[in-house]
Length: 254
Image (cartoon, rainbow, N blue to C red; front, side, top):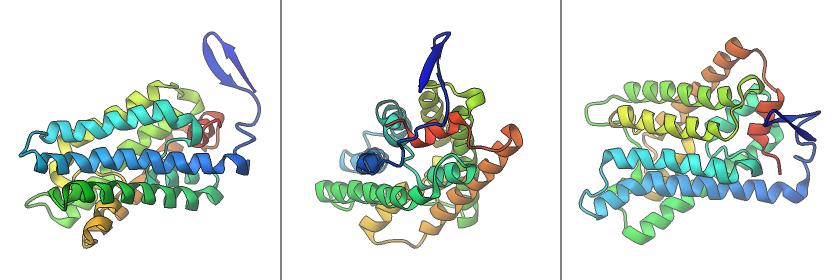
């Protein structure tokens, strides 16, 4: 049940008692497949189209497009299942107490499927060019530098997500602008170091399509550790999770 007070949407009672309704599960999982597909299609596709067009995309556009895509997906589909689009985000919401653990495996599989489908499509359309958008350490960057960068970037990303989702600071649709803006900012200053993935699914798609997992561990360990650190920071800033705003953001309202 909801009410409007002073133009703000407030929630009464337990959030989303129908979240476990199996009739809606396929919609939530499809939203994660579709959303992650779009994210990786744009994120990895920037490098692929740049290579196919002789460099007409450029780094600034390539790192801005995923942020704008995430902003759009949160706005048009976040209410269905939370629009996680990222295993690190799903993990953080669950550890925080905003998302049920029993739903985690399905979300992770959906995200990896969406990412893989995007890169397989890019390979079918353009061939294996632009490394199919693989996120890799930049020239002269060590694996250690890259994994630390991914950790730090994910701490910031997940902190923004958890912060704007809390009941004390729920900014509604403006959270999409905050999250999308952070992704753009992170990419603009750090993509030459690690590719600014912050998302194990984003890096998984190109690894599957190219068959090269040699440095995938960077984009699994860094974001996962960063998400856990961000949950700890959220606890220091706001106490325990599981509040109405956090559950609403993590679970959607379908």
